[in-house]
Amino acid sequence: MEIFAMTADQNGPQDNQRKAAGVSLFRTGQSGSYHDVSPDLQTGREIFSGTLPALFNPARVWESLAQVQADVKSKSGNGLFLEASDHPAAVAFDILRTRLLRGLAEKGWKRIAVTSPTHGCGKSFVATNLAFSLARRPASRTVLMDFDLRHPEIAQILGVKDDVDLAEFLAGHQPLESEFRRFGRTLALGLNTHPIERASETLHDPDTVTALAAMIEQLDPEVVIYDLPPALVNDDLLALGPNLDAVLLVTDGAQTSPDEIRACEKMFEGRIPLLGVVLNRAQDFNAGRYRYAKK
Image 1: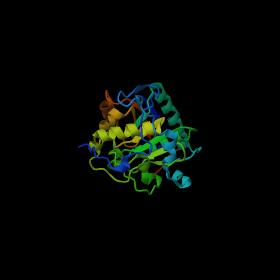
Image 2: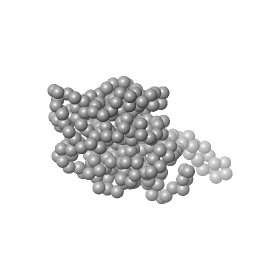
Image 3: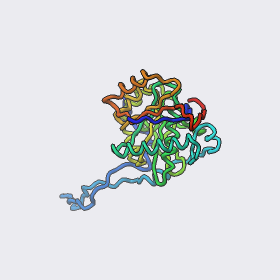
Image 4: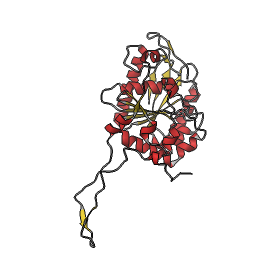
């Protein structure tokens, strides 16, 4: 387990009846051989035993996502670094990105949860800045999903005004390209503007598991970041656990106690590997202090 010190103050019953809109333009499938044939004994016609190829490729899916725009200058003033910057906080996120990628490559992981022990530690800002840092790599593919289903806020953080109901995608009622957005060419956003009261039950639902698997198959990302609720507040993280490779814990140097960190470690033990701990609002007299909105 690594500890990443940050100087910035970022706080930032299964429905089998599918609506027609739930059929993606890029339906999944498996490629197969077209040379395995056998004749129909009655008609003499050939029957191909191989499966049809996938009717999509990730590049086409990415191009199908509606683009969102954000005011880069205004966001940097609010603690978000959508573009490369020499600001010490932006540099810290780039360092976190590189160390994270090294850890993922060693394990062959890609599905990362970002959480915190309690509210107010800045997990959403860390998740968002980390996603943008990852997406700045040329020819990369990163997905950021707002899985704090009870209190989604990444759309608000980014200033996205679209009405997006992530529950429709998770239930299979809407295809990926209807609910996801794209920033630039390398970052896909699974945003949400509709709080879900039965969040834990949604995460336990087999439909959600199917939707997430389809998302990874269609987008083929290198890294998926799920912004999840605080670990000690509800069981959402544990509910999604089987669909995660590891967790990144964001703590607040001004409010998180050692007991809370130990409680999280105990919760993750034997269930979800703890990739590292981000110490937010760490005191660093060389880099200085930088204050952002608490979320």
